[in-house]
Image (cartoon, rainbow, N blue to C red; front, top):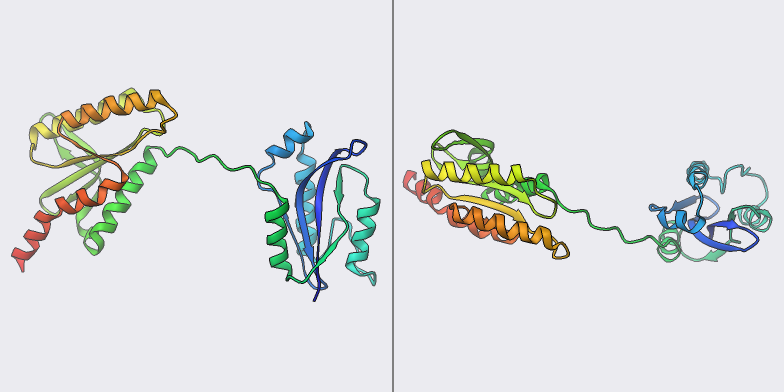
Length: 273
């Protein structure tokens, strides 16, 4: 069965006839599929106007496709789909236009994916900086994965350890009657508030004074090199934490550090056996 496709285009000024692709339509005798842009920023800059009407049209066209129709207002009749679409392509002269359908031997889904990849240009998404919450979740996940089945009994989240002056909550503590190690996550991919820097320094200092042999890890997400101010903060703060007795870990250093500090747990387990 022959499939066909058409490109949905935005033409802000039909007289100038400058256009940009905003969607693709693929269909055969039984199916109609459409896909539109995810990111409309490029389209907004191109048209230099409010584009809510384009998004509204995209939504209505998706609804039409779900009902097996080619476009909003399409009426199924004895006229073949491609002929109904040709009439639209030849007679729509407003700011939304469709190209005349072209044929393909691909099935509708494959055709839609191929034409969308070719004709719908999406600006690359900028990676979002990972915050402290991400650092915490990453630390917990990696420690649980390393411990495997034992994590249920050993891993404590938001667990308080006694310091010389007061108790301090750590993101992860591995303990089973005895405290084996603790870890705290922090991200320097974002701006780190001074009060957070100082609170972590205080908990390291106070716990180390009370439990000097307890391993403490500060798991860090280093800053983007493009931001020298963040880099200076990272170097200053991690140096301070290290001097206070904490081990500074990056993502790739978590596994070897944890495995090294699991040895006392493994030894204890063997003795019990």
